[in-house]
Image 1: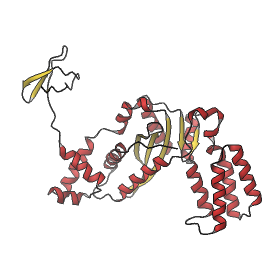
Image 2: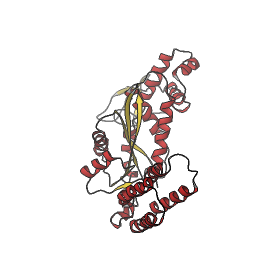
Image 3: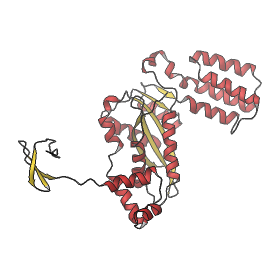
Image 4: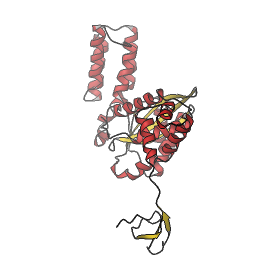
Length: 314
């Protein structure tokens, strides 16, 4: 016979009391409760809005209701969903505390806002996020990491695209932890200075291949040797020289993963996986229609991030 779990103590020692109510017979509980009806409309509403990317007007036509009613139904369904941080709390044992951080700029009603996302390397999924209007970015990163600390997540290392604000914040707050910069981001930054857009010049193609060899060298010493050789023996113009000089300054930050002190952590050299997910969020927000607010955007981003499947970071 079916016996539902008691929502108060979790016990299965329940009996029919006065339908639709049930009673828990466990000592020190003896409470009655009613089973919550599972609303399949919530699941259909979320799938239609998030996965199919339908507009509220289209959902209203499908459900034969006004688009404002469709909006309220979707928002109600999204509010009932578990937040990403609660999932992370359950999966803490699967995390190795190598934290990948990234941010994406979006616009809500003409206002510039930012989505901040934290990702764990071992779990292979996002572990927390926040959406805020433009302001003190270091404050929002601090809040993000503070929320993770409250549930017992203590980072051992960081991987990021190396924006100045985040770099300064991590140097101040986590002085003893390694911070690896994404090699792919650095390559793309250098490429934008040397040859923005599509590369058609064979000479620039060769130069960019040499830059790739430098960034994916076995060690920092080997990378510096190759960079010196390239700078001295390749015919460079003023722009290219400046780009290589910039690369020389940030090169040590690309090889934190090769530092003997941090080798045991096996830090990833790029954050491509989290970039792919950030791209998905951006694409969904671009196709979004209807009333927009910080709150509704937060609910939508939460649903997108909770549906992300495990991905390898490397």
